[in-house]
Length: 91
Image 1 (cartoon, rainbow, N blue to C red):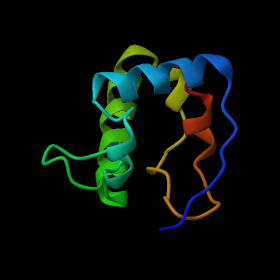
Image 2: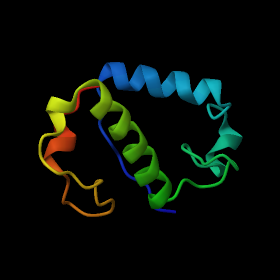
Image 3: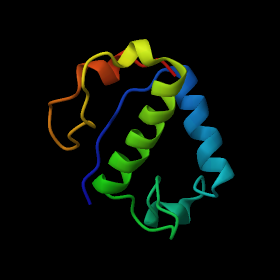
Image 4: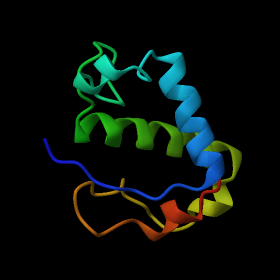
């Protein structure tokens, strides 16, 4: 299994700790399970992440359409390329 060290800001670290606790993933045995999972509690795929991002982008467009004036495709996961207008959305 590949692992990576990812620096997090304090707020994100606190949110992640809360998420892990709420989903029972803060115990030693939980290392066998994915941190982010689909509705079947299986590994979340790239397609699953793309679906979730697209879903919330559509919601954000309804609230703040001015952030999405350029045509924007969902982020291409697994590559360095990202959609510039997606980075303008502040959650």
